[in-house]
Amino acid sequence: MTIGTNAAGRPAVLAEAPLLQARNSAAFWAATGRSRGHEVIRRRGFLAVAGDRRAGLRVLIQEADLTADERDEITELASQAVGPVDIEDPFSSTDLSHLGMRTWQMPVMLRQPGPVAEPAMSVVPVRAEEDLHAAERAVIESFELTRFEPYRAGEVFPTALLEQPGVDLFVARLDGEAAGACVTVVANGYGSHYWVGTLSAFRSRGVGRAVMLGSLAPLVDLPVTLTASRLGRPLYESLGFTTAASSTWWASQ
Image (cartoon, rainbow, N blue to C red; front, side):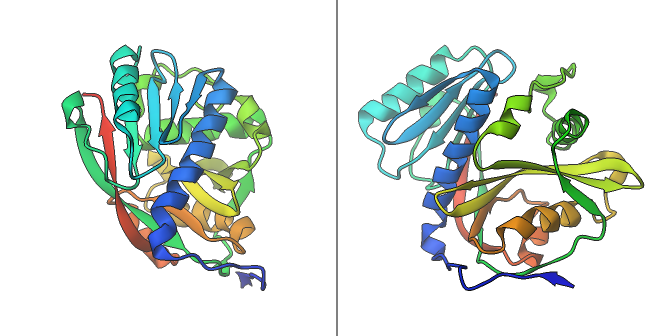
């Protein structure tokens, strides 16, 4: 059985994917920053969220043609950050090698509007605090976010995040327990996925596929982007995502 789409579905061009991902990432991190009480800095060419010692600084490059002043401001923000620094450039057009940070690339992927199969297990939107904390733990473990250890409930995903427009969290349950989670964001008529993770005790049991299918169900009428890890890419390809470009990431050592 599938969950269908309708004539409202609008195709997107692969070349648009980096810009769509840039805009959606900015919407997500601005929402995250607001919910955490962190400073959100908006410029023409980038958005930054200046957090505390554990969250650090997140910079989302928004244009392929950063000005010298914008690049200098990113450099200054990075030098003043009180915690880790993470910078995402979906256009792979800005040279930040002078910051001395480690760097790598990941594919930006695009899925056109279209139906999805039903997940093989329960996948539900997060509404209760218990599920919110389960999603947090899944993400912290899956992405090895040691900066957030020891665990503090509500630090990664504050309750206020559930109230942010366009933001939804999902939890997959297997054998009655929370097994995986993800975040989706709808902004400007497009969707995107973040933090798709599975707890180690439930890996290789189809949790990642299930949480993707369950979270894609409300988005079948929209183009959806994401930035894939090496391990996640085959799953996303099997769900109809196509690689559009390479995003460059920079992170403090």
